[in-house]
Structures are given as structure tokens and as C-alpha cells.
Length: 405
Image (tube, rainbow, N blue to C red; front, side, top):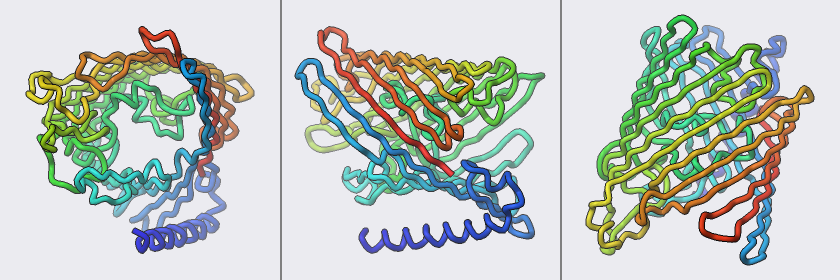
């Protein structure tokens, strides 16, 4: 690994100077060099396009536990990422590559060599072929078509980070195929997606365990498209002049899952050290509304699994599966000085004694200052965590700076 890292960084540095040089030549086009939009180059015969972006998040967090009267604090590089995208041959064949450079992204998975004990550098590596007016085929590793909060980039969030509902139940990234469609009927946009993937998350190199993962997703925009793809951006930075609504429905069937959450979590084993397979079924429903600076996002999640497998009956698992339900609702208003106040309530509940989920309620108040939209912003939030049946709670304060060019 020590020999590989210098090579990676050499390539990245050369890529930076290469794209910067082209960006300087095209300075006459303000759109191509606008802050937050990346550095773009298109070759002379228009058969290749590349856009390079970099972003980073610096986080300060502090917590307090009422029961033990103890506190903790931390400075952290939450995210540091490189993104490359564009097309090859013609605009109908697109590609996207995203790499995570922070330790959180590179954390090694030492589960019997499922990632060959290597840092998980690659987040996305996907080809997108638009083979007809309404359909496109994606191949590679990328986000599965799940809950809206997960589909929104972590650069475009309304709070410092996603909700507890997302962290416990999301289906995250995986490697496989996705068939994506988009149709319009009057002002209504309907976008179905069908996916088949390995089912064990990103950067897995071991042979498939159990079965595959099947995902069906449907997006409905009754009032037409949002300004600047606002259905995948939280906060109403565009101050939509007319009401905009997005409704998302997702069903995911992970056949023979061996990780706690399917694509995420620890690998579940029995006393003999063998993987334990369990079929996980996940349902998401979400609604996003925006109008004149006001935004509302509400999500529901339900992840379930059968309890009749022998290991669960005898309670000899190394870890339990992440099953249960969750509700999250957040609303915010953007003032004319680009300061936003937002509030979020999250509720998660386990569905049985064989679940790793801990019942919890969270109340979060946030304030954000958007200097250049989501590309340069400062966000802070304060959370009260409470646990049903327990008299004491916990508090969490976070402040984060985001920069993306």
C-alpha cells in the first residue's frame, strides 16, 4: 500500500495541473469555470469530455452524556473527495468516478479478505449508456436507487450530516446494473429504476455470498422538474417560484444477505465462523417539497428479515441484522441573506429482540450560511438524543465547513 499511494497522488497532481491548464484556456466561458462547477475540458472533435471536482468537509463535534456526566470532542476531516465525470465518443455514453481520500472513506474491511485488506478508495466507478430517448443503462459501482436523503450528495445536505434513519437502513452503494427510465405526461415526470447488484456493498472482491440484491425505485414529480436538479439538493436555494414536489418509492430485496444491513454493517457469522445468510426486505417512501425558500423532506423506512433461521433461534450470531422502522422529517426556511434555519425529528424502532437497532428519538436544530450555495458553506446543528425507557439522554453539537470547486 505504501508503494501504491505515492503513485496515486502523482496521478492526481498531474490530473490537477492538466485540467487547470485547459480551464485557463477556456476562461472566456464563465459557465466552465464558475466556482463550484468544477474544471471542464472538451477535446476539439467533441468525442471526450472530462469535468474534475474536489471537495472537503472539516468537522468539529462535541457530545455530552447526561447519565455519566462525561463529555467528548473531536476535530475531523469528515470527507475529502475527488470526482471525475463526462462522456466518451458522444454525450450518450457518460462516466463517473469518485474517490474518497479521508480515513473514514478508506477504512479497511478485514472480513476474511472481502476487500483483500485494501483501503476502499473508490466510491463510484460507473458507465451510463443512454440507448434511447427514455432509457439508460448503468454498469458499475454507484449508489443504489434508495431513499432520497441517500441519493442527495453529502455536499448538498441541509444538516451537517444525514439522519439516523439513513445511517441505519440505507441500501447505499453496490456493484451491478441499473436500468433507468424517465417519462413525461403533461407536467408530471415519472422516473422508474430497476437494479440488480451483488448485494454486499462497495469494493468487494470476494465471490458473491448468498444471492443478489434487487431494487425497484419510482420517482414522481407531479409539478414538473425542480430548478437546477433541486430534487437532489436539500434546502430551497433556488427559491422555487412555484410549488415543486417529488415523491419517491423504493423496494429492495437482498437475497441471502450476509451483512447486517445488506450493503453496510458487519458480516454476520455463527459460532463456527461461517457466514449466516438472511433475506433483507427494505421499503422506503419519501416526499420532498419546495416553495419560495421553504423546504420539507419526510422519509419512512422499514427493513425486515425472517426470524426462522436456526442461528437466530438459538441466538448464536456474531452480530444481529439491522431491522426495524424509522421516520424522519425535516423542514427549513432560507432567508434573503442566505442564512437558513432548519429542524429535524428522527424516530427509529427495532422490530424484534434479534435486531441490532437501538430505539432512539432525535431532535435537531440547524443553522446554515450559504456563501456560494452548497459549494462554500458553514453549517452547525445541535441534537438532543433520547432513548425510550431511559431517563437520561445525550447531546451532540456539530459545526462543519464545506468547500467544493
